[in-house]
Amino acid sequence: MHPLDQQTPQALVGHPVHSLHSRSGNPAGPHAESRGAGRTDTPLDSPTTYPRHTAVDDAYGLFTGITLAATGIAILGQSGLITGGIAGMALLGSFLSPYSAALLVPLINVPFLLFALFTMGRSFALKSVLVSFALGAGVKLVSPALNASGINPEIGWVIGGTLLGMGILCLARHNASMGGTGAMVLWIQRRFAINAGISQLVCDCILFGVAAFFMPADKLIWSLIGTVAMNLVLIRWHKPGRYRG
Image 1 (cartoon, helix red, strand yellow):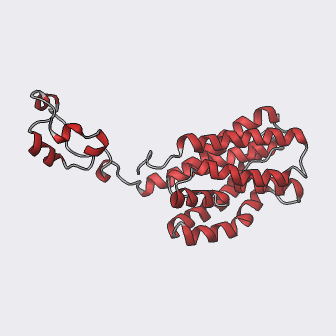
Image 2 (tube, one colour; image 1 turned 135 degrees about the horizontal axis):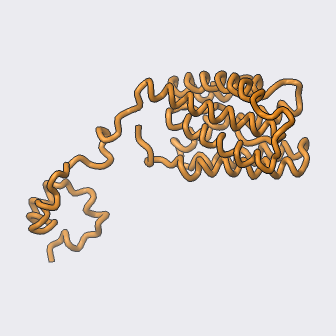
Image 3 (cartoon, one colour; image 1 turned 120 degrees about the vertical axis):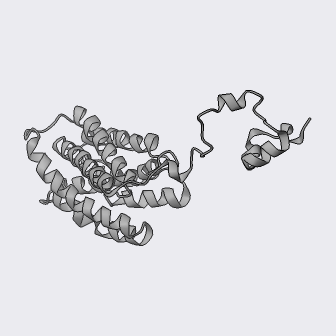
């Protein structure tokens, strides 16, 4: 038996294509040429296969992410619920103070945006600053359009949590975040390969521990379920290496 035939498929990954052909002729058999007609030798993970986002892509991606996230936050706020991350901090602050979540988002974000500047780079930080202020404006615009009498929390958790999660995912796809713990967990994922959704859940547990002293039990439970819905979006769809561009 040829030595190559005894190796596992993983062991063959490191062999250049030309070296395999030179050692064993045509390893795919006599019909490989006809089966491979029309194929290219470009690897699937070649950078040329995944062109970078254009400025227009980024602009519309950020707009979409901000719109989804702002709508999600507004729905959660009208439901009397909180969530994780900077949105949850702002919502909880709005329930405990005379200030709106739209105003608190950029204010609370300042230290986190400084962290993003030094750890995630200038481009990420600048985009996150833009998102932070645009998100506050978006929440202020969307909230009046919702039912002023409030939204049933039994419905608000799933709609608000899912929309917010999709907004965060969209922002991450275009190298930005809402700031807050979102910037921190994205850095942890890049640095330590720990899934951003899992890290966010840890941060959210701390936030909910604080909220437990101020919120009714039923609202806290619905908020927790909505936060799980938000983070499931990141856990399932924001995985390193799955998305290029």
